[in-house]
Image 1 (cartoon, helix red, strand yellow):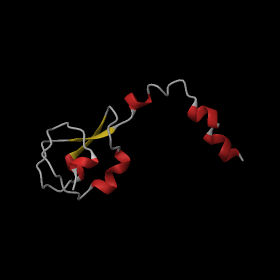
Image 2 (image 1 turned 90 degrees about the vertical axis):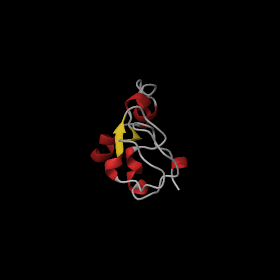
Image 3 (image 1 turned 90 degrees about the horizontal axis):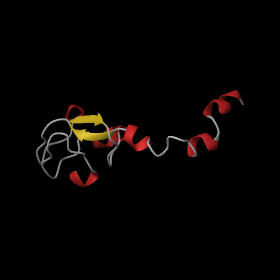
Image 4 (image 1 turned 135 degrees about the vertical axis):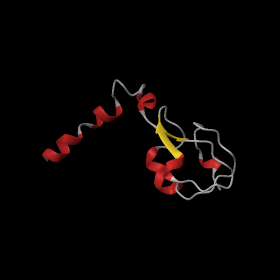
Length: 84
């Protein structure tokens, strides 16, 4: 029971006073350098920075090795539409 208490209440999760600001503090996936169409994504090609974008750092595993279908500028947010 004590481990459940550590998780907090449902109210604390969904009625947080900072919930409106949460997207500002979350991180998204961005191009660390200019990336070319046809290039397979590697971890060193990606930055995890603010603000939140379409993809989050938790998506990294499913992105590694995926092929870009268009060129991306440095610091451009990466989306699923950018990948084959």
